[in-house]
Length: 412
Image 1 (cartoon, helix red, strand yellow):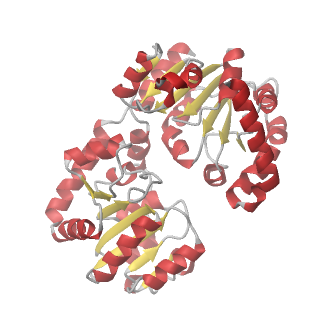
Image 2 (tube, helix red, strand yellow):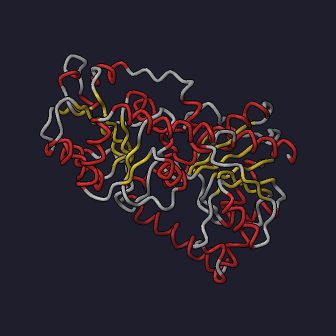
Image 3 (spheres, helix red, strand yellow):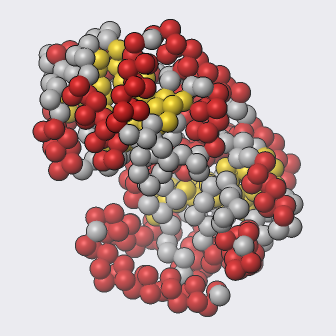
């Protein structure tokens, strides 16, 4: 199986070299990966003590950040190397307060893996949630490098727990310790004989809880809201936006809307603006003088959404109306907001929990979106009660990063 995998990864590397330039993200990743080793050779010296942190993309960075910060505070004499696989993570967090050097992760080819580890020579490696590359894990295990997985979430349907997934199952045993988000994941690992596991919970609760301590002031959002009821639609996809546009066009002018699309695509944003029948402005071309007169504010940039939630009265979180995956509901929950999502949320335990507690609402079509948002807009007291349930849920589940650090300090 490993031979077959190595053939596939080699063919993938050839394909990327030949055709990767046709896709912007693949082109960015390819260009960045070509520079990774030379950057590392300049920045990492043989005498350095190194901790390597790997995040597939931006979401995993945010998820792992509380643990990263705790590691940085505790292991002050270590150099921190951070890798991303996706441009959406690297381009946004290539400069961050944790890492001394940030690079793209080289492709999982045996020669590239050995060259990477020869230069980085980490003493501790932290993977976040997913993105488990076989050759990296096997080589780390061969070199006896302490490797852990944090915020892991497993499901019975995954091949690790199937007869045909024996090879992938064995990869899990390359980890010295796995920290899971829930008891179900722990039980699944135990069922295949993996016992070095701790249910730490989801580190994102710590991450979003810390956001309340930050300065979330955005004067231009305050000017736009103008003390009116405001619905923030975060990380939306076209499936979400189709319903939202219809609702906005039929809604009272007394309600303000902020839309932060997941993908900043100029053509899609222009199409959205044309369909909206309310006064609309984009972040890329707003002026303070006109904001209060607008009903819709489209955030065609990145990095502002978490702060924007602090101005919301209601949050709609995108991704659930399609199959791309529901986005982070906890960022809105920590501000005490009632949350509306689409119909596809089964793989997201935090959404299921908030739904059961009564602070989150799932819609399946325009009619359910309309009735849910109308109810929340017209009942401010209930709206506040729903939001407080979500805020309490976040508070109850904080502490994962502290538990992870307790185990790491004992074993590393």
